[in-house]
Length: 128
Image (cartoon, rainbow, N blue to C red; front, side, top):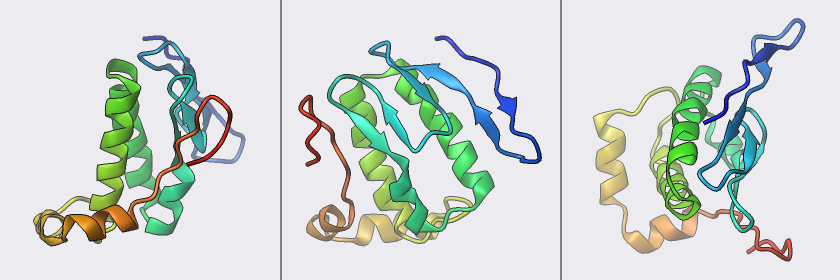
């Protein structure tokens, strides 16, 4: 796994970039809005914006999630992303608590599927 040291943007607490390498050998920037994990699968982190996660929580989530993207297949990683977004929709904003897990498990599967949309980009660039 290749990691470039994050360089700080002037006057900002947020690192400008930190490049990682996916399991399929695609480079992605830890702080970019979109991670391309392979030729067919990209993760759109702008979908997290409406969840009102704290900056620190989102930063730590990205760091932990990047480890999965580096070690596991793109299909597995995108499935985790879909499920974790569903969990975050159950009231998570700065930490995952027992009540969030209970609410997540209590929702009927059809409701969870409707609320969790994800952008999958195929080879032709079409969004599904």
